[in-house]
Length: 514
Image 1 (spheres, rainbow, N blue to C red):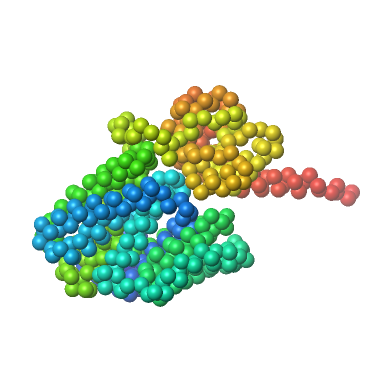
Image 2 (cartoon, helix red, strand yellow):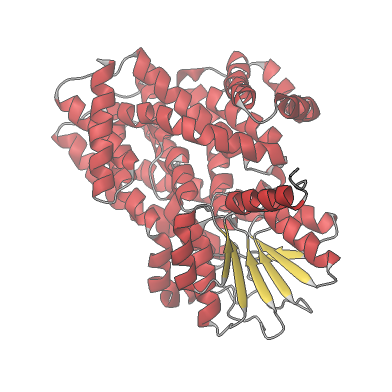
């Protein structure tokens, strides 16, 4: 039976890829097809799916700075949106003749957005660390905290008083980081990451909290350390495999009856309104239209937590079992609708920009692109390890570099270390619009993602910048695309390091004995 699931997932995932849809849509479809043949989920597929979600949330946590979540935009938008959607959806479910209490529970669950889908979509667009990515993840974390309480109400049980002790978790950061550094960079680091993800989940479970929330929080405790990025890279591919089980499980919920289809249809009609409300609230909370649009699209899907809430309500005898099927199909369809839109969201923004910008508030936005580069003569786009090394080298050469990055926590760290780094999103077409580039001798792009570097290079050239643009490559195949976009110098770090190593070796070569 396990082999059937693997075969179905591979065939459906391959079919989705061939029609340029994310493979997760194929996995959902595979589950629905298997449901038609009365194939049911079992403990194995559920365990695989749960493990995949735990790993996903742990890796998301590795890239989150908790301080950046305590913003009015996150708390305000997340709370107000959940309140409004709960009120509206409760009214709709009451019309569908659900009793008040279960209607409220389901409405809150429907107000959540999918952490799994949002994180995957942001990662696929290389925007997990961007301002809009952190905004979306922050809102999701807020929703997850509400979900913990909701699961308790539906039969998951209230947390133990011992849960208060988890507030001391940040105190364990020095020890956890020391162990991570000692583990090194090979297989032991991977095992350490799995231990933390599962151990954090287990720790939260024994005090009555959700294991997935535990994995997320433990990941956040490690966030901000350079080796956390390496752990993130090692775990990301592994959790992709296990997440197949989760998406199959969602699809295996099957199909509802005629009344269920009517409910699904009504709730799908509400889905665009959910996204529009996100956009309106974000603009109201002083965000730019672009940030609001990209974040809103990422959040416009129903959540897997809706399924969990429905299952808890069924177990508690609050609603009929048909609502699990309804929620399963609703989540699956919302995933399938959202995934292709998220894939082209940046192109979609370019088409809608003139219309949506009109809704921006005429104020200084917290995510506003820079208005001036000051006296800088070099710009470094992306202030990770490579960007930092380039910045420090230019300082040594008595140049005047300025760094641009879209990670607020990264910017704050560089400012504390004495570097001049300001906010700037490589993919934003407005990044260079109002900047005076006449004194800039060169632009160095160390973002590491081909799509972002191509976008930035094209926008620079369109703004009339004619001097040198240098970029780092992740693979040699990217060279031609970057050159076509206007990049004049490009390097593949591994190949360049190998060449320099050989040059250094031959430079000290002893003369042959003749």
